[in-house]
Amino acid sequence: MKGVVKFIHSEGWGFIIAEDKSEIYFHHTDFIDREEAKTIKAEDELEYEIGEGKKGNKAINIKKIEKKKN
Image 1 (cartoon, rainbow, N blue to C red):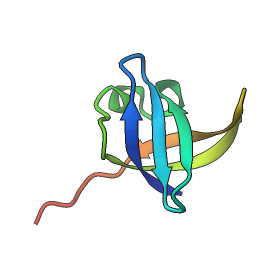
Image 2: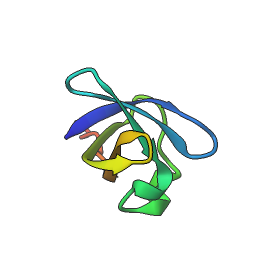
Image 3: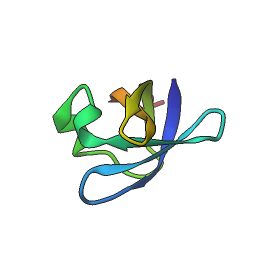
Image 4: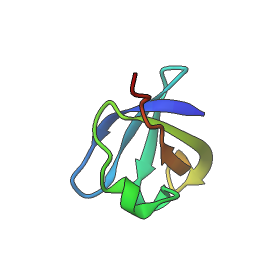
């Protein structure tokens, strides 16, 4: 799945707006590359899978989609 970061808290959690416009919770520990998680900001595009969290669905196996330079 793909989506865009809506919000990220300084503690490393936030929400993704999915392609279907739903909001998906994420946490920095669910990134494939933990160092990459430190660089994420609002409006970054992410690719992820859906997993089960304590309070419902959450994003897992997350990775940033690098924007292509022209």
